[in-house]
Image 1 (cartoon, rainbow, N blue to C red):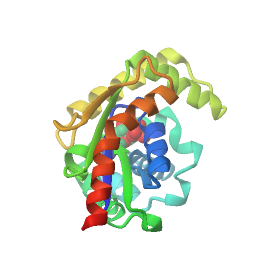
Image 2: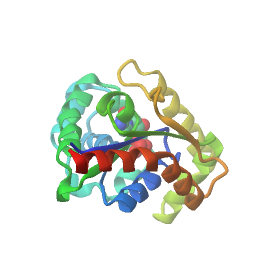
Image 3: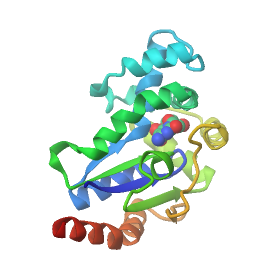
Image 4: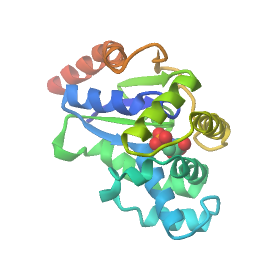
Length: 222
Ligand code: DC
């Protein structure tokens, strides 16, 4: 059985970077599940569709191009907002569900484990994950991080607008009826507001290590 680390949290909380570093540390595979929703949103927008319409969103989910997961085009605030909209549609979540489960069941490269980050990984996709983290940071710090990330990609954005977008997306992701963003009861909470990325990673590692090492030992014994 794959050892799973489930990482959830709101936009720009640091969960993506922390997850990538955890995966590298344990030699596990990593999936950014938000990229699936962003790719779906991009496909809808590129087809001039409406991300709030189930038919358009489903068509987007059926035509996602995984080779574009690293494309800066999926990182824009517009695509983030459209991703939040398609992600509130039950049929879209169902369409992307199997893809995430098969990644966790058979991670690429025959890795012993997988790290998956998103909004509902510890609650819906992998409720039995051996280790769970819920990562938070203040909205202002998250807006600043998103601003830096976009600036690094050559995309200039007004910070006040980014903050408003983050707050609106938090509200939509937390209050939607299906798979809302929430902390699983057994997820360790990590607030990265006052931590730089190295300190946040060290804290995350300290929280998950005992569980991951225990699960790996168990796997060797089994
Ligand atoms: O993590 P992100 O900002 O790339 O995610 C983009 C949107 O996708 C987010 O606003 C909500 C949605 N999402 C989701 O509903 N469930 C996930 N597991 C991951 C992302």
